[in-house]
Image (tube, rainbow over all chains, first blue to last red; front, top):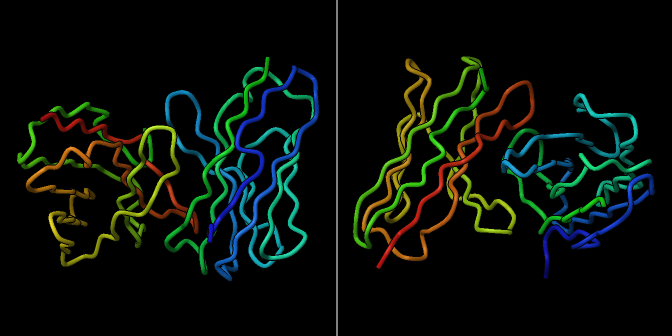
Length: 112
Length: 108
């Protein structure tokens, strides 16, 4: 059973489109995260939710909007996609923060 | 200055070699430290936590030097399967800060 899952695994889309990425964890963790890993492999946190409450909101364009319907799910919606949004987006979860985090397989987003 | 800095490598070593990576962190208030491993086109996976007294897990030994604010990872008897990128991680303000990784290539 996959502990942290993301869909889709690959996403290719045109500039200006709106897209969503979904994440689910079955570890019973309280905290979930979204990270962006760019072409230079630098992994940077974007958002974190603890029990459905937003606790970390880094300097991210407001075109990115996370949503946590329950503590097992954290989705990421991106409006008006830009070329610079191309990256791999990882979801992660942990029990309490900032303890050991478990990552999903990633969503490779390509904006054309 | 980046909060967590690592030599990007690559470190190219023969099988059976011992290799060491260092990383430095800038936040003296950091309390939790980890090494993660990331294979090509895969997600980061926890390799080991790093404790103040140093800790060992099989062929892997992690050390923490708080005075100098650096963390090290020693890999003994390298295997081909150890080829990956190793990410140094420190906590800062309730979040984990990842270094950009050190790439290791183990050759036959």
